[in-house]
Structures are given as structure tokens and as C-alpha cells.
Length: 192
Image 1: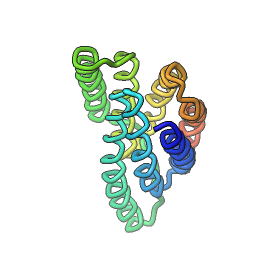
Image 2 (image 1 turned 60 degrees about the horizontal axis):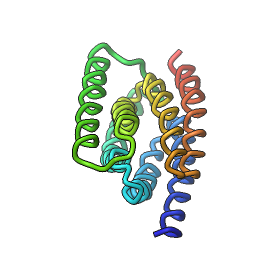
Image 3 (image 1 turned 135 degrees about the vertical axis):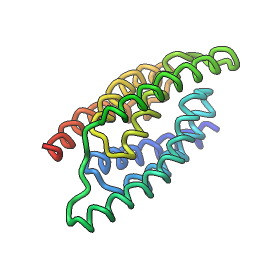
Image 4 (image 1 turned 90 degrees about the horizontal axis):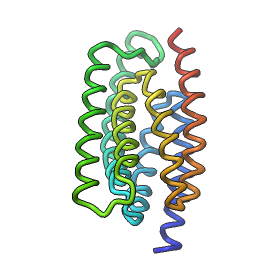
């Protein structure tokens, strides 16, 4: 699946660039692009044996559908109040939920990958997936601090994907890393 995988990786990278641009702009259409990106990367990571990353994109697919609906509801509410959909700071309850989600998802994936698969790097793959799962959950609620989790996840992903030779994906995650900083700054300005 050499050429096919490369085409899917390039397509995933291209839709990923569009996705992060729309995310920084805080646009609901990012969720549709997220569906396309998820489908591409589910196959790419499955072929590479990066099972947590593949599972992450299965999760992204579901969360893209949920995010589309959730942001639609938020937009309706904001329109009724004649306001623009804006990011928010994390609440104490969200922080506790996010912390639990992060720790639980990491340990489950690490144990499964480390004991039940031939995974080449179970710890970083599980960490990347857990950080992204938690950040995406926060994103569906327009929480600013999701960008900080993405910053860490993207830095880890660059190392893992470069090690496996997924060069377009590595490049995409370099852009994601830079975008994490830009997104945080952009969203923070919308809050203040």
C-alpha cells in the first residue's frame, strides 16, 4: 500500500492544515474537515501499526460529529443572545474531568499497547493519544487550555512520527506545534 498510503498521508496532512487554521479561527466548519482528516489517518496509522494513533483518529471521527452538533447548539444560543461564539477558560469541574480522562486513557492505552500488541513505542503513542483525547474533549466545549495540551502532544508526536518515517505527518505536526502557540494567543485575545 505504498503509493496509496502516501496519498492518504498527504491528504491527511492537507486536511490537517485546513483543520488547524479553522480551529485557530474558531470556526465550526473545522469539524467537517476533521472528519475527512480522521478517515485518512485511521488508515495511515493502522498500516504503520501505531494503534493508539489510529484509535485516536477513530475517536476524532466521533468527536468531530459531536463537536459539529455541540458548536451548533452553542452558536444557536449565542445568536439568541446576539453574541459571537467565544472560547472560555477551563472551569474547576472541567479540569477535574480532563485530568481524570487524561490519566485513565493514558494508562489503559499504555497497558493495552505494551502487553497486547507488537507496538514499537507504546508509551509515547499512548501519551500522544491521551493528551489529544483530553484536548479534543475540551475543544468541543471551546476551552482555551486545550491548546496547552496540544502543545505537549504535538511535540511528542513530532518525535514519534519522524522515527517511523511519516515525513508529511511529521511536517504537519511541526505546523500543529506552532499552531498550538498561535491558537492559544488568538483564543486568549477573544476571551479578554
